[in-house]
Image 1: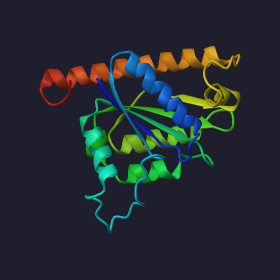
Image 2: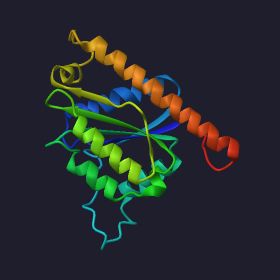
Image 3: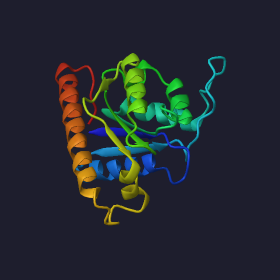
Image 4: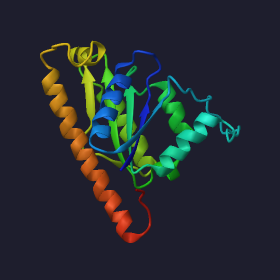
Length: 193
């Protein structure tokens, strides 16, 4: 399957981006095509409905990737109970045509215990864009972030629990994506390799 990850962190060492990179590796190891769009590495212009951004190369690339995606993973740090500003700006550039009928996995990293508020916000936006929210999400917070800040081989005691949860939720998301993709392939109305 073809999966697109949008990494919504806006700093070089963002734990939400490191979590997204880990998810990318796991899906790649399972044989899926995975493309990650990192908003820190590829910033988008500030959205305005009064302007046309047709010539913006990075935005055009993101839109093309999403058109071709079977499923989408969206990762964000949680700031003040919400998603990052750069991620919200990116989503403002996009529309139903990019997400409609596609499974969406929401992922967050928070300085506190977990980033539930940002995930609820993300899922609400995806419902409005007609995406199919995965029934589970991934959120890391507090000490769990250390596993990504120091590297997965750091010996953090809770690392195995975090890893098990990531594998379980990712497996569920990929099963949903395969199911939805199969439905569209059998009707001839969609689906890619």
